[in-house]
Image 1 (tube, rainbow, N blue to C red):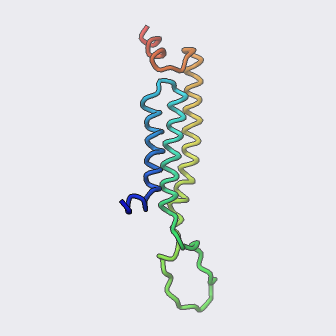
Image 2 (tube, rainbow, N blue to C red):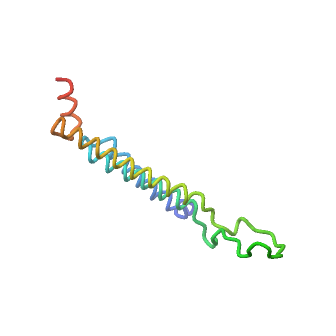
Image 3 (cartoon, rainbow, N blue to C red):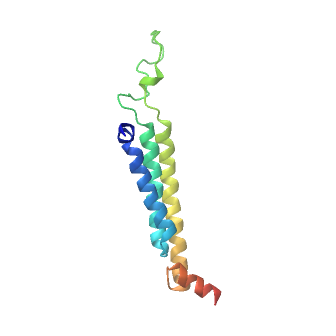
Length: 127
């Protein structure tokens, strides 16, 4: 039980992602599905950023410049890994692009069928 409480952040991310997944699967309104997709993406991004965080870690910048004659071993465990943060910056840009395309498609669907509900759109397509 103590281990589950120590990793509470993983439970929070799982709940956020499941809320987004539920909105994408259970809702009939396309805008609600798009909002659910955004919530799901945000949960994943926050999860990866938290993985990259390290308590007591420092930024990965070597303090001594070129030409310094310091012969000490660099301890990688003392530094925070910047790769997850950089990748999530890219994921944020992709998620904003995805959101824009999804909203543009939803707008086009609305102008064509005058509704954003899946059931009504499917009825109009089949007629």
